[in-house]
Length: 151
Image 1 (tube, rainbow, N blue to C red):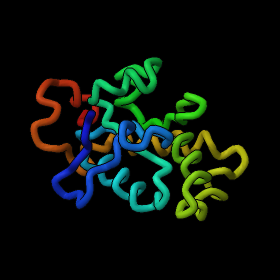
Image 2 (tube, rainbow, N blue to C red; image 1 turned 135 degrees about the vertical axis):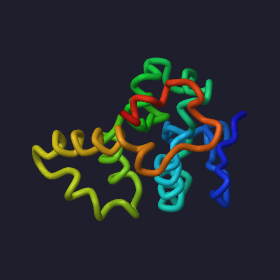
Image 3 (cartoon, rainbow, N blue to C red; image 1 turned 90 degrees about the horizontal axis):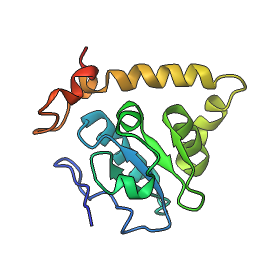
Image 4 (cartoon, helix red, strand yellow; image 1 turned 180 degrees about the horizontal axis):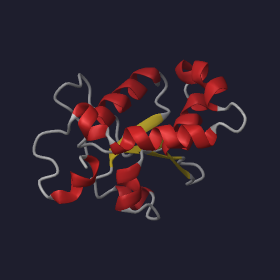
């Protein structure tokens, strides 16, 4: 069983083992920006609709074996537990805007007709620069694996 804690997080994020019926948010647990965003999602999720898993956790392959490490490094994914459907990046954010009542205010903007292409582009721009925006956790990315996010 994996735990997902951060030095600045007051509570650990619930894992898929702790909430077996919840949708799984797979994020870059070595990225400070990403970790901050999932902590915000946890606060907005008052009913344990979501659990969390770092893309660096071996359990990811059990949750959704079809997602490659490269895909997971490019964008956050939300995997629906009931259907197994995985949504990445802007599509995941759109899904969450309907799933979490505290995000409903974003839904009209995110679901505006023909706007998904713009949201995908914007998401990719932020995701590419996420380590420059907030850095990465200590002792992470000791190899050149994260280099693409600094170029």
